[in-house]
Image (tube, rainbow, N blue to C red; front, side, top):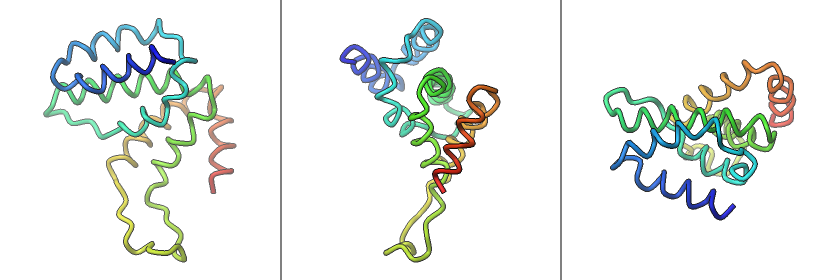
Length: 137
């Protein structure tokens, strides 16, 4: 877990300055053991954003992040929860205190939807995703 933490920290801290780091991460994804990264799914999901085609470093980061999440989440159903929470970010109960002050982050909603659609395409993940969606309502 310590190595996974350092690995992600380096990637998060320097991916904008050195896009080569993202390329190294992308190349390493097929070889990575997903289990040590599972505790970091919330941190990974929190970095999701829309694709910005005008910023190649950001675009590469987001595409690589998608790939990493799609690799990790099928091995741990717990990883679906932060993605669903982000996707449902605009669903605030009317009776909730200060609900009128809530501003949904549509960028996060769209980005998490993008990853969830990829996960739903996997026949092994789809039934689990459907069950978790029912429980999240």
